[in-house]
Amino acid sequence: MSSLSNRRESPQRQHLLAQATRQALIKGARWAWGIQLMIAAFMWFHVQAMHDAHLVVEGALPWQLGIHVELLLLVLLLQPLLWYWLERWPLARWRKAVFILALLWGCLWASVIYALLKTELPGRGTMEPAIAATLLLVGLISFYPMSQVLYGFCLPILASLISQILINVVAFPWLFGSGMLILLILLETGRRMLTSWFVLAVDREYEQELMLKRLDAMAHQDPLTGIANRRHFDIASKEAIAQGARLNVPLTVILLDVDFFKPYNDHYGHQAGDECLILVAECLEESVREPGDLVARYGGEEFVVLLPETDCRGAIKVAERIRATLAARALPHAGSTVAPHLTLSQGIAQWQQGQTLIDLLERADSALYRVKEQGRNHHAVAP
Image (cartoon, rainbow, N blue to C red):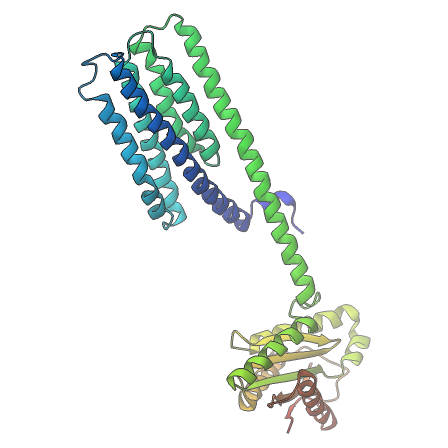
């Protein structure tokens, strides 16, 4: 059994993490869109109030600040269509596109914050740091699963705050710079903490999937040979019988028994007996062709093959392939009286309307018994 660290590096775990990251980013982007739309609407009313109160430096920008904010609102209103389009992209292209989109998104916000700093009267630039801090918090909560997306959105906004030193005279630049450094540290440490929780949740989901698969294997697979067990065969057979009755399609089973298995065990030992059963299971799986065919261990040295949508003629061909495949392996069997190598006896029965699974298996077992009476190492078809 592999260790937990090895399982965590498995392709299945990486795929689950990538899919979970994508879903988390999609949900985060939807939430961020709603919050930013409210912030942009608030900014629009703020700009209108500034104009009415004559708190705007005229001519500071070659364009009107109100138009700038209205453009931001328009882009935000169109973003759901873009996200809906991107959700259909393959994961690799999607990751690159989301990074570029986050970067453009952050640059657009940075340009608005820069425009506010340029147009407000000196000494009144108090709104912009609050808006920038709120946007950084929104970015952290929404985009933490992918660091490149998070910083693609946040770094332009941080740069717009730093530009305040150049635009407006800051009384204590070193203090302002220290505050920016602390903000960046908080952003990175918060990202790492949230990411660790996210990865832990994904790993727990992955472990649960592995546990469910192991439990399913225990419930449906034979632990020695790895093929289906009798319980799985019974379930699949009943479903196949129901389908045959509904669609009027044939269904055939082959019941197989290893010839002289007890003498084989006594002569070669139980370990060799287990290896013999594994070899038989491999030969059976090699001999079936259709995806719906099922090979199962019926019990002890008995095996069964379920052949949906196959009549007796098709089942005979499968039985002959099984015999040839096992003969090609030529596993020595000193205790056999029919051949120097391991052989099988096979009973074939085609399902008939109105029959139950028990009836079908009894007919196959009767055919198998007839083969044993006639010398083994062959097949017989139930009437």
